[in-house]
Image 1 (cartoon, one colour):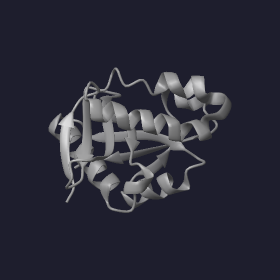
Image 2 (cartoon, helix red, strand yellow):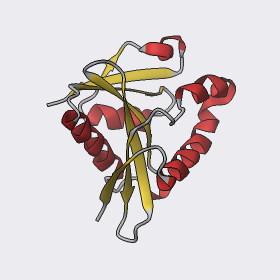
Image 3 (spheres, helix red, strand yellow):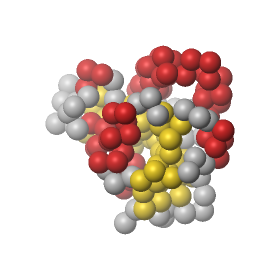
Length: 151
């Protein structure tokens, strides 16, 4: 059974998972590492979640940060390869969406890479729809952005 802990970017398990995410993304970023690196700073993430399995092993993470008055950006979503296919990502995303609603937000937006079809399918299956690239991602040719209106 997967449990979810609400935390922030100071959490050591969150930080370790984000380090693993950065290693994973290194293969995709290539020459754009510096550009994406500055956009993936976790210092501004005050709301993060970490998923744990029955052995209390961290199995996934994600965070949200305010993007507009009524919207949050989902950041640093990651499930290590060995824990994929077990519903961890869905639980993390649902926890972030629920927390967003509790905080008074009405919409989630996010960015992922065009070269990650499994991530694109995941967000589409979870009722996210493609939107024009936002913010700094307007210039990012390898990025694809999504949004979802919350309940």
